[in-house]
Image 1 (cartoon, rainbow, N blue to C red):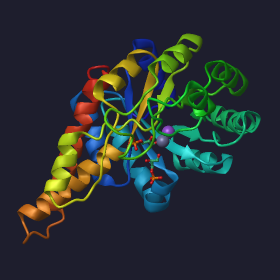
Image 2: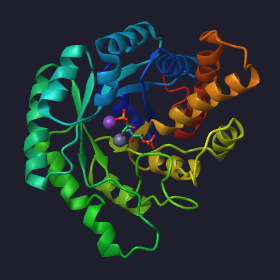
Image 3: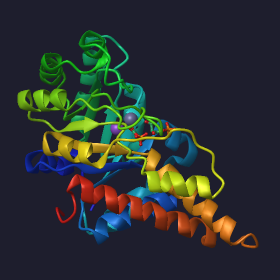
Length: 305
Ligand code: G3H
Ligand code: 13P
Ligand code: NA
Ligand code: ZN
């Protein structure tokens, strides 16, 4: 069933588990996400960025909405990193049931103002809203506390921000970053900060940049001819702990990008004579499904729907 973000995330925060919010850009990614969620009885969020809307438009949104409506588990369609009020409103008109307004690069007051506008419009239409406070970006374990504080989310500010905006869920900066290169070794994640913010708030918290970049997938990518440097993601244990202590929405894009490319590369390498797209994109869908299943088990959302 197609539901709002709040329908999925409020129970997740209360139940101390996380729900994956996976980026989609085509039918195969969407099927991997929603069919895996059904198989595992897990709630799930499917998100489209503004780039995904530019690429797939209403055609892609309709694929997600149709699969979501027919699904036997709760599914929300979410706008990832909406850059403006207009962008959020456009997504709502397209049928999205959850939108993010990302005004985190503005100062606190302007972030509040822009977020509040979106919250008022979205709530009037029964749609829930994610906003962001703090600046995303990988940080090294050894940097001094003052520097961390400069861009990671301040717990007291988070309380003020939630009160002043009425946001339904809040993305916090906790040291994670987007992409396949989150830092050397085991990338940093600020557990103490998550737990502090969670202790002061009750709405669901959101972690961006939550791909695990599984080394097995990275190795297969290389073995199939792909080139990639020192790729590293958030360790499963770190993500598990974060979801037990307040993170309810867990954003994942990079892992599915890597998994789909591994499936395609392996299929093409193994069968140089193949040109049936189903024999190429089908394996990509299978590898993505395996990665999604692993993530859902780590987050603890399996069996929650
Ligand atoms: O946070 C960004 C997501 O990974 C989406 O990326 O804007 O290239 O679609 P994109
Ligand atoms: P990853 O790059 O770690 O998959 O993060 C995706 C994300 O945060 C989308 O909003
Ligand atoms: Na988002
Ligand atoms: Zn993000």
